[in-house]
Image (cartoon, rainbow, N blue to C red; front, side, top):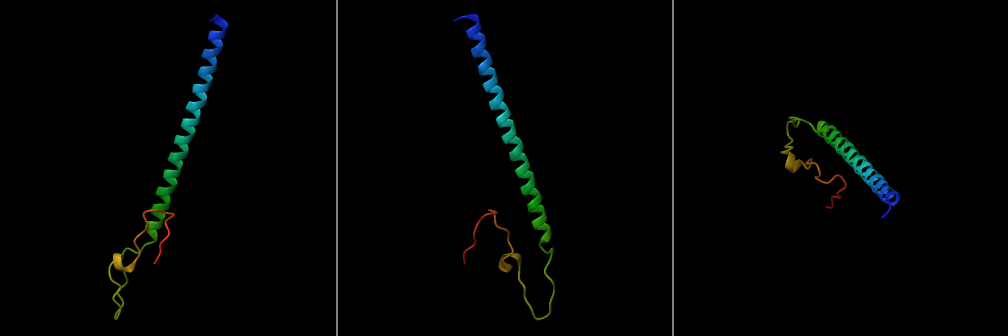
Length: 81
């Protein structure tokens, strides 16, 4: 193998690794951004739930499980009755 050919192969490999590293880092940053957005959305949704049920004479509202306000574990899940 000639010196010029070795240099070209080394350079090509270095460029390929740099591109792969950049792609991985971009994907990792995107994942972090999505996780932050989901955490913000979860916090917002949680803040919309009442802290306690109103006390209305003649009505028994029950607890959160029977009231049906438990959040879905999967944001895209379809609830079928």
